[in-house]
Length: 244
Ligand SMILES: [Zn+2]
Image (tube, rainbow, N blue to C red; front, side):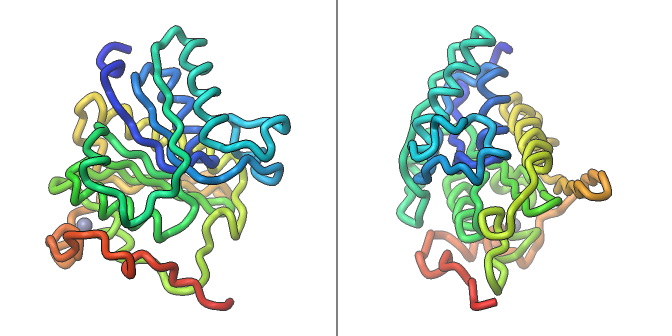
């Protein structure tokens, strides 16, 4: 597709969502995809992380992911450059780094990273597409800084109690595929300049088969949209996990 070749995307998380989104973006012709993660390929995740095989177990996810994304792009005759960043996004991430990208796509497996990315992208003024999947359900949300609802408008803050992310509670492969495809769809629309792709919360329930899009508005009391949160204070992103 024309227009995508000049776009730069940062994919945060090379797990199930990252694999699903990344493959679509590479096949679609996004010119530059950076992948950030610090995890290794594990056998228990292969059912939902479709870029990896048993031969990759123990290798760096981002290194394998970038090899595969490059190959996906080549199979569609696209000139995608995939760059591996072996790192976990933490509060030291700078707005200048994020401003290297046209879009950030977050598929992390824990709430602190999701809220960190929401805050960091809003502060840097970079659009982001976030998503989560646990067991048989998942959600996706695209946000345009200063223009549409952010993660905090919807979920407010890191939930109390144990983090029931997919690494702890498990997630079935099809849900990751659906949410990843939704994130890719929102991402491509935003990269093409369709701002209406932001501001809808998509929710998929794999057990009932229902897919709902709910328009979400910016919340006046939102700590991020109101400007109360202006930096990435490390204490704000500590896990709230308590013994279950
Ligand atoms: Zn907000």
